Length: 125
Image (cartoon, rainbow, N blue to C red):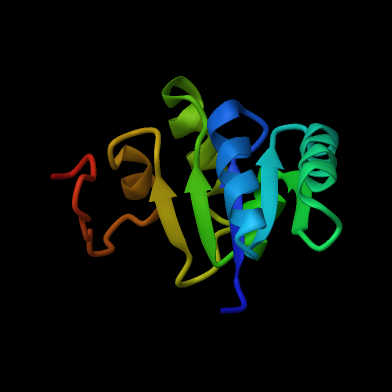
């Protein structure tokens, strides 16, 4: 499947761990951060661990959200609402947002009026 997975908060332990595993599995990854340089450094460190065949890059959070088909939110709960409100205008139609930080609150910010589909083990269950 040809898709990009973005990870908002991808420089932290949870986000970089997911980026590492998915990049090793062959997924194309964009690590998002408030600081694009920090994201690029994290991507370079992961690339060095995985090897040159990995498809992984760093960008600021807005760029990450705007160019990826799947976006995982791994920022701390305390900053999640502010970040998602800032990004509300950049999401591509059809973007899948995986909210790992807020039990669904972030989803409501990104997709007001959209249908909520809860998965097994989600915060909405």
